[in-house]
Length: 291
Image (tube, rainbow, N blue to C red; front, side, top):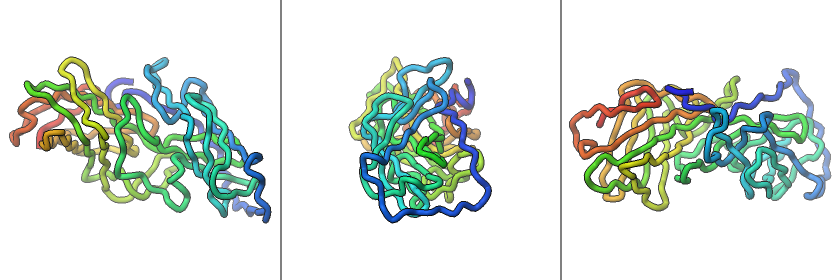
């Protein structure tokens, strides 16, 4: 879709949860490592998981499991870490790599990445730039078996930047924030499967190496944020030469769970100045102004 939602990244059906209290009977013995295997997959073969596909298919970008991905699984008492050797697939088998878990528990809760657990439900303040991709797109699954159907907890703001200045522009980091909606910190899971962040903490996308902007083609920066309406959305572009471009939207920017909001910006010399300048944001249907 165009406008505020450019495309849906992954939409998965959640498992029906049981409303009755469940007594979990745990066994003293933990099953051998080789016998503790969980399957993680998507219900739609064309849509997958932790890395973004190069091109959209039927209007969708895919996410896929990547070799070395780790998830945390909670059995009602213990949390263990599982990893996969599958690569670039919507289906993956995960084997126990750290901790212990009841192999016959009546329900499981799983998170990706593995540093998110039932005791540590936090979205990180810092993300790392991956060319044409994302790092550690957070997901959650609830299951009464070892088949885990993950749902995305967040969406993506894709800043598509072009150099409209006379001199080179190199990006070292990008900060996003909003006075009315948090992007990082502790979260709960809403009834629609979306992460709901407490507080108003922002996020910073760090580029390990300076990313130079072209005057001919856009460079995409994918930043993971929770579902919400950011009004205004503040963007702080930290450049390699030490300068900072501070921008703010003149209208709300909406992001949906499992969706991407694309924002196109052409940066000019006036972006360094304090005077207000209208900058069109084509896909999000919002204007930005220097602040």
